Image (tube, rainbow, N blue to C red; front, top):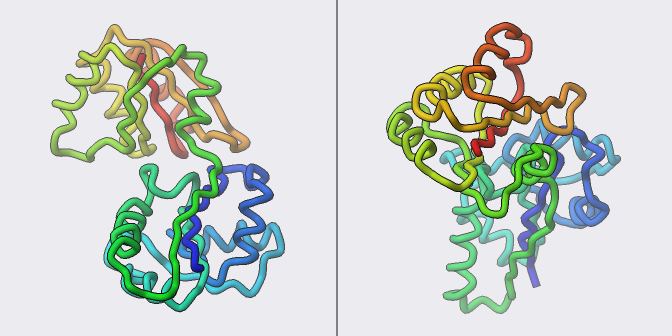
Length: 230
């Protein structure tokens, strides 16, 4: 049997790795990486050496899905990792898993193939755990579109009664707060910044207050952001 392991890796602090993850990364034949340099830092910290690493990022570069399937048909075990967090959650992985599931259904090969989850960190759950926002149900939007449809999306966020969670980059966080101030000025916004890292920070308030906060301290407009609108 050959297995594709979908492996969650730390979102910042490299100590947030499970024992099972370390075992799988040691045992597999090939590790599929979003960025080989990032994955190497994790492997080096835990003295995992002599691994075949190859790039997979769903952007028509690096290893192809056909080659990945060929590896599995040869009986090799593979681990899929992203730079941070869980593959397939706003990270590469979903297309690959879908294609391999389709292959499994139609394959006549003697080699049995399975897909197995190796759960790990996620910025989504990490943010919700420390945001202090009661969330019984929510809408997760991943990364918002850069341009097309952003205004419509912020209007929809303003109209929703459920909490809305999304990721944002330092290049757009101020524009995002300006849009929330314009379309959802009465909503409470919680921003979790640099989760699990040295400068982890959680701030909350009205969109206008947070916009002023970050404009007054541009040094904080760094890293990755998780935004909770409630």
